[in-house]
Length: 319
Length: 63
Image: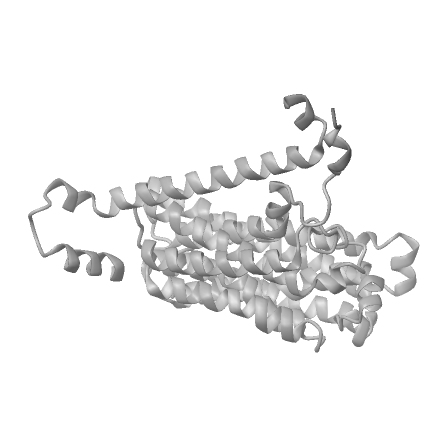
């Protein structure tokens, strides 16, 4: 009897992806932030929708974010393969073929936009389409490899989700949802540059012109501080809109001051200081930045719950 | 045959992938069903009321 097992490879080869590889392709950690901020935008919105419709809309936003992540991994596979942080990703490691990643990215993009148009409205779907386009084409294909302002301008892509969530509920773009956008937009440079400072060698190796690579580490540290400084008042402003309240005001103030202080510490350090303690302050700032975003948008959710329970309590609304 | 499949990681991966895709598709179908029930709930209770199904569909899509 012939032993057929001898002709079958014992381990999975290239393109033989497991389901988890497809999940990784959609950048689940980034999706978590997108889902959370979009959810906050939906809950903070003055108009509501049936919970099932709201959940369906949120899933569309999450899938759209995942699709743009897949398109990013497809296009960046060449540089991802040469960076320590990204070389294990599904495409550079060969578990998912590049063409497959492209097909998944395009397919899920179209599906998520179409379904959001049906579940919510055309404005939300249009904003989601623009977000995907901005991240995949403007940021990934154009800005990322051509300018040190890649993160600053490209940050807009990550800033849209709460605005999409808001638009899905209200069918509108307002001052409040624009403030949500601005909070994430201004948060993005310090967040990514803190990472770039301790991953500088990776970006240098692959020729991605991140700020520390092009403008130098000193300038990057200063800019981190300036962005955190501008972020502070902008992050507090939503407290005095129809979406904000006392909990948001407290959380946004405390979190923004902490973020600013840590940015100040990073701004004062020299390369020698950072080398001596293995970039402790920079890593701490990066971690704080992630908690910051969850805390601030969590504050919006808590205020919405508070007002739902006890009413608006005469809270001042300026915008 | 079962023993043969167990020996190979490739089958485990494929099985996991297939079940995963099945779950995603099933979830998508359920989501569509639930949203349909919610969106058309009122009309479903009284299907003869209001405009033609074409008008209702257009209204629902543009809502």
